[in-house]
Image (cartoon, rainbow, N blue to C red; front, side, top):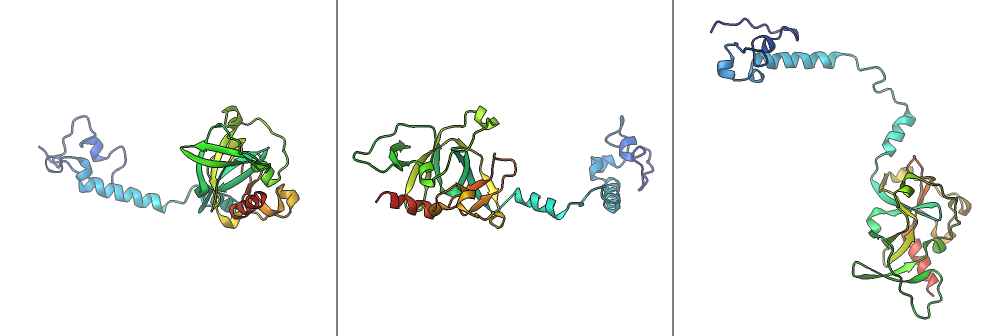
Amino acid sequence: MAGVKISQNQSKDSACWRLYGIWSAEPSCEKLTYVKHCRNCDVFGNAARQSLDASSAESPPKGFGAFSIEELIEKEKVAGDNSALPFRVRGNCFAVPSESIVTITDTVAVHSIPHNKNPVLKGLVAINNEIYSLIDIALLLGVKTAPLTVTNTAKKGLFKRILVVNLGQRFVAFYVDEVYQIHRYFAKYLQAVKSQSSSQANDEVLPHGILGNFGQWESDCMLLNLQTLQSTFEKSLK
């Protein structure tokens, strides 16, 4: 086979691997007899390195890296080293740490407790062969009913679920109107709770902070303090 002259600096159209190599109609390059494929050839490798060097030397595209400080902060807020499960009660958005969630299930039968006079304790429920106290979370939190709007999640029927949550020393179950997806956040971006009027919650169960609404929910979401939530529930039992 006649030798083929190969140039180290070839344009895309005159590249030897297209004219004589594996990607040509009739491969005739003598190097194919021992390299078997153009990607194993030093000419192809050198051309790839030259192309990479040329690309890295080019100016970045317009707008590349031109983010403001505010935009960078917003991008960082998308991720996070903490996670919580937001849910809705009477039109208000609350959340609990995702690690505290035991299970989420549909509505089940509620068994009454004889001589129970505590309005917070609604009864007992059996879920996955375990017995849990069913509480009225809205009454415990002291929240007012906020106006509801029809959302996409509402159309999917994500209403009336039971959440079972580990408060630390007690497992409780309660009804919620809607459950959202797990939300990741950075603790440093939690907004402070200014007053009871802003949180619409009982003074004793004020949340850790407020998760700002970035389009995931209809309003800001209050991250509950499970320790104070448990202590408030324990007081209601006395």
